[in-house]
Figure 1 (cartoon, rainbow, N blue to C red):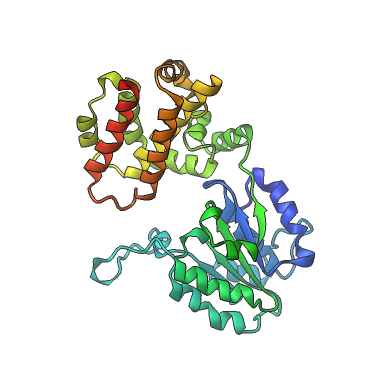
Figure 2: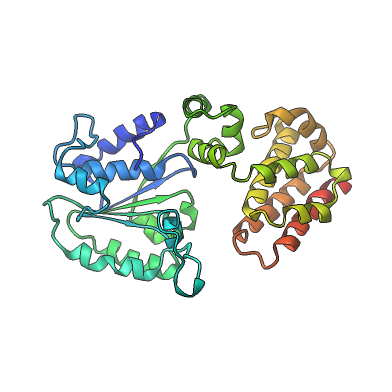
Length: 335
C-alpha cells in the first residue's frame, strides 16, 4: 500500500469529515491511474487504526496497523479480480485457464460470514471492492442484497473509474465520493520527483493520470506500439493499413486503441477549438490534418474506437481487428 499522494490532501480531508457519520457504502469514483485504490486503502487503514494521528492518518504502530501491513487484518477484506493478483501470484489456474478479469458471485457470497460476524477489534468491518465495475451481473446482484439490508458497522468501499457500468440500484445505495484528477502541474512535479524523463509528455500520453504515466515510463509498456503507430498515422495518405496491422499484431490491442482515441480526440479538438491535449509536439500537423476531415466523420470514428475498446481484451482475430480500425482511419481522409 502506498502513502497518500501530494494531490490527495483535499480528498483526504473530505473523507475525514465523514468519520463522524459514515454511510454503509462509499463509492470512490474518478479517472483511472490517479490513486483511488491507495486512497481507499489508506482510509480503511485509518478507520481501523487504534490511535490515528490528528490528521486521521494511521499511526503505523498499533496491532491493527501491523495486521493491515501484513494483509491479514481480521476486520478487512479486499475483493478484486483474480487477474489483478497475477503479479503477486503468477501461477495459472488448473488446466492453464487464465485468471479472471471479473469479480465473481462466489467472491461476493463468501462475504456473508464476514458480514455477520462481530468485529474482532470492536470497531468497523470494512470491505473494499476494486474495481467495482469488474463485478459480473450475478456478483452485483448479490452485493445489492447486502446493501439493501446493511449491517451495523459494516462499511463497503467501492472504487471505480466506470460508475456508469454499475447497476443504478447499487449507485443509489452508495454515497458518491468524486476523486479529482490532479492538476497538470501537480502530476508533472510528482513524476519529475520519481525520475521520469520528460514528465509533461508522459503525463499527457496517459490522459493526465500520474500513476499510469509512471508505470508506462518504468516498464516501457506500449511505448514501441505508440512509436510505430504515430509514425504512420501522421501521414494518412501514405498509410499502409495492412502492413501496419502486420507490424502491430503482437501488440496488445488496447494500447493501439488508446493511442488512436487520444489522436482522434486531438483531431476533433483541433478542428473545433484549434487546440490539442495529448500530442502538443505534433499540434501543427494535427491542426493541418483536422482541416481535411469532417467533424461528423471524426465523431463516427470515435464511436467505432469506443466499441473496439470494449472488445480489446478478447478480439477474435487481432490482426483483422487492427486492419479494420486502421482502414477506417485512412478512410477519414480519403473522404
